[in-house]
Image (cartoon, rainbow, N blue to C red):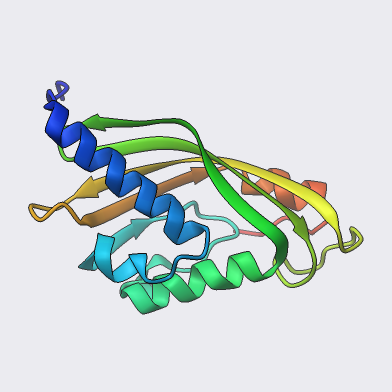
Length: 155
């Protein structure tokens, strides 16, 4: 599929949306209703992730983010590369850092306070109103499992 040109105004809107996306992941829960389209669809890695069908509403999605963040002290995510826009898609690479405290992943053998760095890329497809209709996540979560001494998820 050929690339679709993005106007400067679209680029600005896409950058603003990406910034709000990062704010949501950094604990600004109110951003969810603002940027997520009703019935948005998630595409998650197979291992170590919930069933995407259980994350269909903004409330469910925010609860998932909260559960992830609650395992880490000083949880912070920042943009590493991008965002880049291609038509109705916004793509960016991010870095998450925090100190593992408890909770997820299960079976951790590392001590509380162990620093964690997680890298990933998000692809967001926007609907006609500029809200996120689909989200694809690609990350190195298995590296986190290994770094924390947690058992690897099974298929």
